Length: 230
Image (tube, rainbow, N blue to C red; front, side):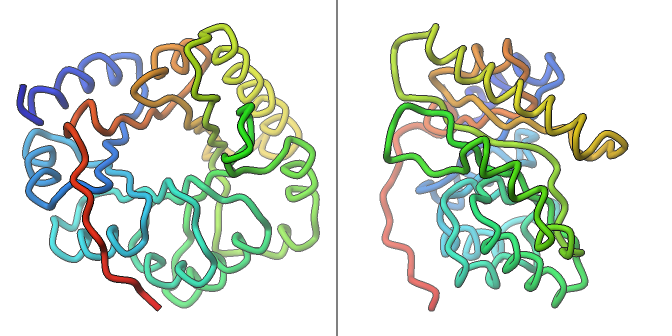
C-alpha cells in the first residue's frame, strides 16, 4: 500500500473518534511527507530539531509541526519561530527556555508536559509529583509565552495489554486531577497525547486525544545523518 493509502486508513479510523492523528515523519524524506500532505495530512511529528528545521523550510507553510522527542534547551531557538506544539516538556528549565525564545518571536508556544508512565528507565518524563510541583511553582507562574495544553506519555514497550491500559489510565487520571486543580476555567487544557502504532487503540479507549503513528504510515525508516545545529 502507498503512504496515502496507509494514511487514509488511519485517518478514517482515528479521526472518526475525534482523535488527532500525528504522522511521525522522522527519518523519512521530504517526498514522503509531501505525499502524506497531498493526501490531506497536516500534523507531523519529528524527534530531531535539525530534521524538523530542514523539512519545515522546504514544505508547505500550513503544516502543523509537533516536536515529540527529547528537546535540549540549546536547540529550542531553532524551532521557536514555527513549532505548533512541543509534546516533550520534562523540566521547568526547558519550559523557561521555550518561554524566552517564544517571546523573541512574539509568540505563545503550546506545550505538553511529558509524564513518566512506563516501567522503563530509558524513557524521559516528569513524575506525577514533579508535574504538580512544576505547576505550583512561582517560576511557572511567571511564564507568559508558553501555554500548557495537556499531557503526554509513552507506555512501556510490552505485549501486556493490561499493563499498557493501566499506564494510560493513570495518565488520564492525572490529567483529570490537574485539569480540576489548575486549569478548571481553561478550555485550551484538553490534550492527552498517548498511543503509537502498537497501542493506539488502547490509548483511545483510555481517553487519548492525540496519537502518534509513524512506520505504519511511511514504511521502514530511512536513516539519514542530519546536519547538526550548534
